[in-house]
Each structure stands twice: as C-alpha cells, then as structure tokens.
Length: 204
Image (cartoon, rainbow, N blue to C red; front, side, top):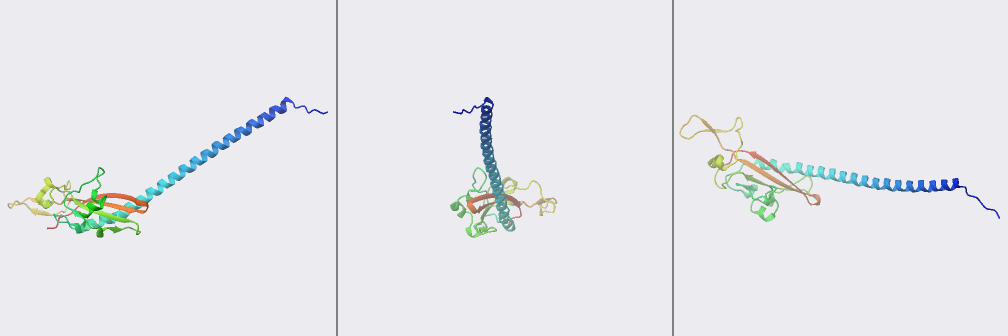
C-alpha cells in the first residue's frame, strides 16, 4: 500500500491560494458595486443636464409672450382682449399670479384665444399683464407716484409737459410699470414661469 505524504509546505501553498481567491472575489464585488454607483451617478447627471437644457429652452420660448405684451398700449381700465389687469392680480407665495394657475381665475382676466404656441404644438404659452397701480379706473398720471409704481428715474428724451398754472418748469408724464407673467406648458407636463417688467405711456 502506497501512501502520499503531503508536506506542510504544500498545505500552506493551498491555503494561500484559497485566501488569494477569496480576496480577489471580494475586490471584484467591490469594483462591480462601484461601477454600478458610477453609472447611476452619470445617468442622474445626464438627466439633470437634460432637464435643465429643456427648461431653458421653454424659458426662451416664453419670451414671445413678453414681446407681444410690450407691443400693446394699455388703458387705465382692464382689458380681457389683452389679458390685462389695471391693478396687480392675486398671487401665490412665489409671486405667480393665480390666474396662471387656475383656468377659472384666468377667465376673469383674459382669453384663451390669446394663448401662444411654442416651437412645437405641445408647447403652450399663457400670459397676463398687470399695471402696478392701486386704482383700477384712474389713469397712472392721475394717481401719480403715490398710486403707481414708476421708474426710479426718468429716461433721457422722455415725454414732458408744462406744469399747471403756466409754470416754466417741466414735469415728466407718469409712465406706470407693467408686469408681464407667462406660463409655459411643455411635454411631460413640464411647467415654467417667467416674469418681466416694462414701462410705456398709457392710452387715453
């Protein structure tokens, strides 16, 4: 009968190989887990960058509402045909007019036929214009700076008129500040809001 004698050195080598294999497996698992985490992070970053670019594009499209609002001349009283309120509208804590958040409230201010279409048919733009005055029937000139927000300084070359009583001094015609707020509805129910202000003379 033959017996194979296993030396202590061979046993040690086998033990070392087993330990090395175990360590290699642990390292492989750690690397795989790290790779998954990196991929998720990259996907999140790409998704975030894509959403930011998408929102910026909607903001750019909303500027057509501002351009349209600036071209119109506004009277002292409200005009639904122009989505115009002669006084500030009720707003939420973020300053967004409730008329842009609720169709019923919008119906009291403007008309849906004034809604604009963006670069694609699935982008809809709605806007309202507010005169920053406290009285909704008086002209801004009659209310003056006490009743209307006005620019801090009169622009060079602005309109001027003689003061009452034949005074030789000149007084600038009050030009109120108008605020236009726009809401953009995009794909995947994305909503973007923008606001801008401008000044111009009132119509009679």
